[in-house]
Length: 205
Image (tube, rainbow, N blue to C red; front, side):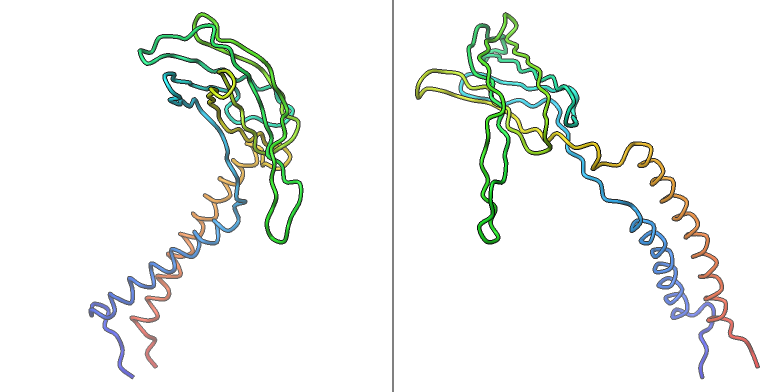
């Protein structure tokens, strides 16, 4: 049976393929141990509505249920000047699934909060709210009269802390991944060396 010479093109090609596959395997094994985590957070967001620019901010950026959330908005005009004494309603609606028809979910929005507010001299409006349930919420500021109303808003997803891994657990998983990956690289290197040695330099009888 013909043997591959160590420096032949076929031997080098085989060596490259084996190395790629052996080094890839430990990384895939380490990744499979990590628990997928969902991240949902917000930063400031701005919207152009008619002649106004509405910017929203919230604190904390990624809230939990039962946690007090501070939401503020600022209204400016086309020249970036604050708009004061703009009256409107702050409304919070939660998107809920009330029933299933076949495979389709029927959703509806339930109003959880409503309050009449007006912007101060700096064009600001602020309020606080504590979300009691995990889910998708729409926060809107609606101004105007009758059919001439306009609105701006943002979506918020408060999370249940029990369904998420703590920061400490996340760090443990990261260290576990690094350790397994590093060990896999060493084991892969040794395995590659042994495999190539036996392939390119077969034992003579």
